[in-house]
Each structure stands twice: as C-alpha cells, then as structure tokens.
Length: 480
Figure 1 (cartoon, rainbow, N blue to C red):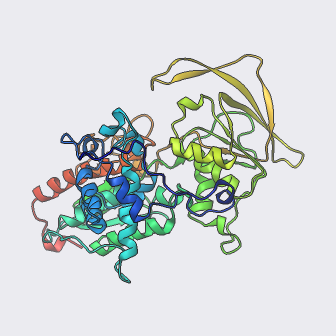
Figure 2: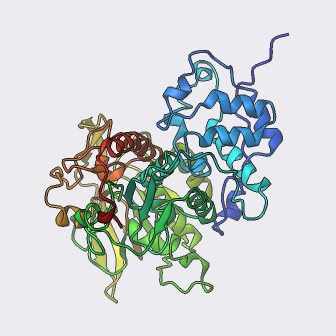
Figure 3: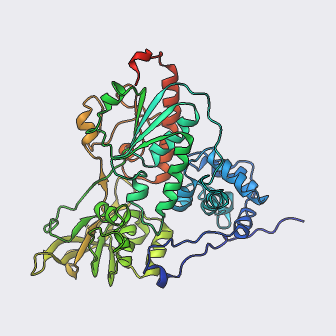
C-alpha cells in the first residue's frame, strides 16, 4: 500500500509571541524525536536528489534523512558532519527556503521537507546524548599529518569551514580572531533568540577537539600581517574570512546625533558583550522606548526584535521598498510581526532632529513608490513628492549594509581588492592575487548568508589542500 503524502511540514513548536518578546530565549524550540521522524517520512527519496545540488556545502541530504527515518539520529548527525562542521548553526539560521528546500521535489505540489529543522534536530539530539566532555560527537578519523600549516583569519562561518575541512586532511590549522570570543558574526551579529551562544561554542569546541587551534584577541594587520604569517610565522597558506563588518550609514542630516547606532554596534553590545543580561553583565546599551530600525534584511530584523526585548514600547522597521522586496527571511519577518514590530514599508528617512537635550528626538521620512527594476532586479524606490512626515523616536539603528574593513588590505599592498574594498578571489577556488593567500565569504562577496560563506570556505579548502600538498618541503630550520 502506497504511503500517504503529508502535504505540509510538521509544525515546529515556538514560544508564544507575548512571552518571547520579553526574553532572549530561543524562539523556535525544535522538534521532538517523534516529530523529526514524522517529518523525515515526508521525503520522497527521489532519484535525482535536487536538494543536494541546492546545498552550498553539498550535504548528502537524502542519506541523512533516510537514517532519521530509521530512527538512527546519531548516524544522521554523523552523515551531516561529513560535509558540514556547523549543523546546529545551519539548522537555525540558514535560509533553506531559498536553497535546498526551494528545489525539493515536494514543492511541485506541497510544502518542501523541513530539511533545516531536521538538520537542527539531528545536531541537538547528538549533543544531548553525549557523555560529559564529548561535546556531542565522536570524532571522525583524521588523515596522517602532512606537516603543512594553514592560518585562517577570522572565525566566522567561512573560516570555520576551512578549518574543519583542512584539519581532517591532516594539516595543522590555526584560526585567528580579533575579538575575545570566537565565532565571528555568529556570536556578535545574530541574537541569542535566533542562535544561542552555547550552540556556537559547542561547534567551535568540536573543531578544537579535532585539533584546530583557536587564537582570540589577535588582530591580523596589527598583531601579525599576512606577510608575517607566510614568513617568520611559518604558515604555508592563509585563508582570509574576515567578513564585512564595517557599518554603512545613510548620508542624511543628523546621522551623527547621540542615539543613532549602526546595527553592528547595537547587536555586538547586546550579543557578544551580553548587555541583554543586565545586571549580570553591566555592558552599556541604549534601551530606547521609541526605536526605529532602518533596513529590510536579516540584520534589521534582528535589531528591531532585540529592541523589543530590551523594553521598547514601539519598535518600528522602516524600509524603503515593499514587503515583497524585503531580503529578510520570511520566517523572521513573520516572527517579528507576531511580536508586535510595526512595519513601515515604502518609507525612507531624510533627516534626524535632536531633542532639547541634544539627542535623537524626531526622524523625518518620505513615502516611496516602486519604479523600474534596478541592477539587482528589484524595483527601485522613488520619492513621492510632498509626502514628508515625522516620527517621534529616541533611538535609531541603521541596518543599511556593511562594507569591508580596510585593515588587511592596507597592510597587504599586493592583495588585489575591488573598488568597494572587497578582496578579489576566484569564485571556484578562493585564490587571490597573492600566492598562498585565499579568501571567501563576505570579505569577497559582500554581505550574504552563513551557508554561502560556508560554501565558499568548502571550495577554498579544496584549493588550499591542493596548493599546500604541491609545495616543496620547507627546511625544518625555517619552520616554527
């Protein structure tokens, strides 16, 4: 008898909106084992496996789902980790709806299989079953040591992927992080309610157990230059995965007033410096009552939802295009709406005014309408004449994009960058203009997703492996 198809995804339990807007606990609570197996049963086991082609890190999705159907959750987790060293992260923050799930055969008539939800469950289940000190996984076999050393600059998703792949191939890998905590954008840019810091630390601990060395408080370009890493520090290759963390601001009057923040600073204070856990962590952070966040991406959504949780009575999302053009994940938009975020679509700030104390008091805006498509294919917003109005605000957060930090390019003159300051690197290998130096993730592409950065890291890791194994042996006296 043929199996009856279930048309919709197994719902994932979530905190109630009224409760979660007052705390920083995770919104989505995850599947039970019964839910996960039921969702896995929806997989059609199609022969062409389009979901694998839709995954930037090439996870064998049908294979891990088949193991889940059999109830072998730990086996499913191990299968995922053959290709992805950060499954608990990807299962929470990757836009599966635009990648593996988008091309799932089920989408021809029904909802796709909840691949991301299953990946998250497998990783969490494995961690929960671990004995003390195991950190959630038995370790895969490493290839014999090659004696080659690779430096990964930055500890975000692209660098961690490179480190995880190359350590298994027998190389020595060191990850350098400028801040006091490893994880890059995963720890400073994504709020606790979307990605708990303990989850990120668990994944980094896993890499450490594989043998990856993580060195924090080390600023490449200051502590060491790229040339010094390749020279006296004795590394055979360097991967640059520093992301795009230089905030952009709108060029409007009043942008420098006290009370105007970049999303980068706002989220870093809350996330990495744990300002949301006051008074346990007495980190200064603004707790505005009338907050306006400008932008329409995931960073804007994270910022406005953080403002709510920090006590804002009004948290507005001001975006110059319509909801249909918003780049933020649909799930995050829906969660924000449920929590009470006020959406102001087709609206753009033009000026910020100070109050009597010299801080932000009013934000002047204009209404927009959509015109012809721009280079990205989205319709360009056009100002509606005579549509000016003001909003009472005491805090403005700018989430209108980020750029490349100039430190590495300023200290590495033979590293070719484009006019925006991003490193030029081959799309398939991550090779840069400088021999032995590779790059990937947002420092090459500009702001993108965690999983795309990981995909770039996977390609770069293959190229780095080929490069260092082809090098002649250094004299032992020249090595550190």
